[in-house]
Image 1 (cartoon, rainbow, N blue to C red):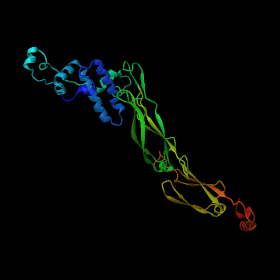
Image 2 (cartoon, rainbow, N blue to C red):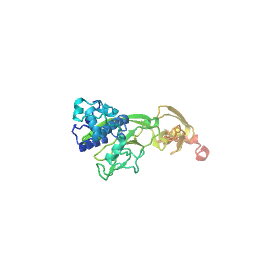
Image 3 (spheres, rainbow, N blue to C red):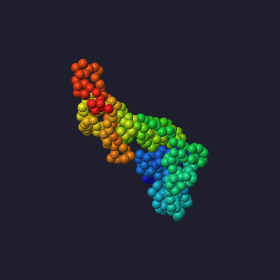
Amino acid sequence: MGVDYYNILNVSRNASEEDLKKAYKRLAMKWHPDKNSTDKKEAEAKFKQISEAYDVLSDPQKRQIYDIYGGEVLRSGQFPPPSPSATASGGGSFTNKSFRFNPRDAEDIFAELFGGSDNGAIGGGKSRVFGENVFKNSNGIFGDQTIRKAPAVENKLSCSLEELYKGSRRKMRISRIVPDESGKPRTVEEVLAIDIKPGWKKGTKINFPEKGNQGPGVATGDLIFVVDEKPHVLFKRDGNDLVTNQRISLLEALTGKILNLITLDGRTITIPVTNIVRPGCEMVVPDEGMPISKEPGKKGNLRIKFDVKFPSRLTAEQKTDLKRVLGGSSSSSGFS
């Protein structure tokens, strides 16, 4: 007989029309392509197979032909010649009947049984229950009500400043609750890949549609990861800028210093400090800040804030030497 339509719908051979409708609705809700974004090809094939099985078994003439001759004869319309006993009894043959098998469109069957309408539907009037946040049924199995998406699930994605500077790929194992074939909740696990883009900021949201939970009578919700920044020992982020604090001695503030800083991507940059550094002074190094995600190739600035360490005490000899070197007055020393 080839394909077994009864087995596809998981019904007995004497299944009633109501049995067929219940079986179809349960399986169609599970395998509709809009509800299976991860493996849409498999879902489409299953959905078409379920729809064809229902189309044949719910039509009395198609079902009778299928029960007698099987699926191949049903599709071809070429019936074998009747046996002498069948001719004598006057039944059991469709040889002289003009029959052509025209399978109905899977989406049309779905719309008919779930009460879809052409108003606001997608794709030439065919209902798309899972592609939208809200799907309106009229006279469907849920009555005149709206099927809404389950609330989105949000998780924190903690990222180091190095990851947000260079970009990286994270693999996250998630658990979510979905109904099984009988409608009972079950937990499924899945691994999702997240590509962290250089320059992403705290609060950036990464949305995975229909990867959240699903409850009775609601479409699957979304899963959202929200970026959070881990503290860094050397740098602090300020928008697209990086800020670092450097403590130097009074001598270095007056005479200069060479700073060697290791960047977030592992480079060592040399920064000469040649000007006199006053308390609270800030030095700006262009293009050494964070990448700007919306402007590839551009970066913010590196801002170095200095903390001048003054000596806690000076000896009389040191004070004399300072007075001699500095000229004893601010006007003659060049300070203002």
